[in-house]
Image 1 (cartoon, one colour):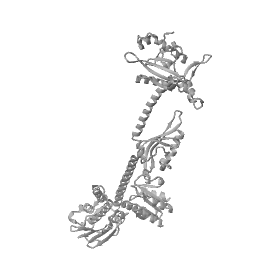
Image 2 (spheres, one colour; image 1 turned 90 degrees about the horizontal axis):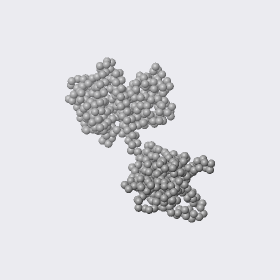
Image 3 (cartoon, helix red, strand yellow; image 1 turned 60 degrees about the vertical axis):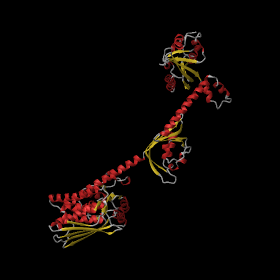
Image 4 (tube, helix red, strand yellow; image 1 turned 30 degrees about the horizontal axis):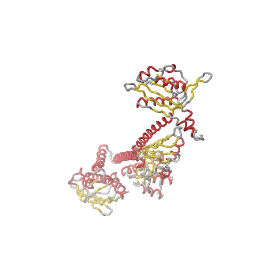
Length: 514
Length: 122
């Protein structure tokens, strides 16, 4: 009997107490064994292994196991090698036996004429770490059983008339024990699966698993449940579970994913949900993925749904766009307003210096009212503040103000500011404010409390006598337009010999303007 | 050059008084007759549907917070050509009105005239 690794193995593995040559026992075993170093180099094999693998001892000792046993050149060889190697690595890492219930691994054979070929075989394998005296792993012992025929039987079991035959083989000791080990591994897998489900449950995004062609809800996490309004939908097909989504295109997408196996990604996708029975549909926006779930044969069994509710992001982005548009609108409108003031002021001023004075005064009048409104965050302005702002340049003692406290809307404040500016400018040029003794009295009252109609009188006294102008200048047009259109009010101009009287009437309710 | 638009009745829908006045002045210089200016959409629609004689229109897109499109549709129904004016820029028009003749605010007299001529085919 060839003393294969006999002496080395004896030194390392066995104590000297035995008078039996355990190496010989090993060699005589009908089960096939191979011993490898932690670097996966073959150091020993028994006769059964040589027989099963059709190999010669000298050819393989000292060689890396996967260089002599490649598992063939078929497509699956790489994956098969990976599985065996992974089992060995687990045995090394966990320092305990690792079981591979079933692994395919092709073995080199020879045709009768001597040409080699690979034969696919199925194996059940155990990798056991062997420790030295220091407690370090010296070797891994691989025990393999060829289960090709057994597996073929198992696959045929529906056709087998007497299941007894398959059972007989299975209860044949070795395989049963390994089956029990597989059972333990399955329990570990079960624990693993539960941990995974727990992770789904705690995920901040929504998660659901749909099964079958009708997309039946199998599990869903609390985030998903919250999304759909906590409806009880487990075990129901999507169409029954969420009837409101029927015509929104999502079921078509699910069908497509299920039929083609192609995943689908939705971005900022709008979904209308009825979260409360009888309530109206609510818009939500979702980023989500439909991922096909496949079995080992690649058949699609269901769809994994996961995603996030991005409704708030979408609303915020919409609001921002709206604000930017509104800002743009206002800036452009203000520029158009300034342009209008410039062009129309230019028409009534032949020399540049007087144009510049008049243009600036109008811009500043506009700007004053803006200042007032900015102070109140554009909620409105007090009438008396607007009047004071637009007349203060002419001296407090020349202007009399008399009336109750009145709040103006922003648009009314802007219009009235421009009107008062034009009246004051006109008075300073031709009216009461052009002579030292002249005076302007502004008084106002609410004509109708219910409709909040304001009457405002501008009266000039002590100035030079006035006559109606022959042509209406920009100022007069501006006043009229602002009263009639912007304030939806009326204007009565009385060119009395004592001075100009202007009577304005308009509603303070901005809704009445439109 | 302004001869071609002489005597045309042009509706102006614009809520900003000063801008409306400017358009009025520009149209006056071109020999056009201003109809309006009108500062709200509902009134504009009433006037258009009421059969007011019109050759064209200048429509501010945002009229005191309301979109002017109902007035645009009423004009289209009568076959009256129009020009949009907007401060929103190119992207300011919704899909169904894209590609229409548009004046960008602020505008020059030359731009107003050119846009009206294009719209009226004058």
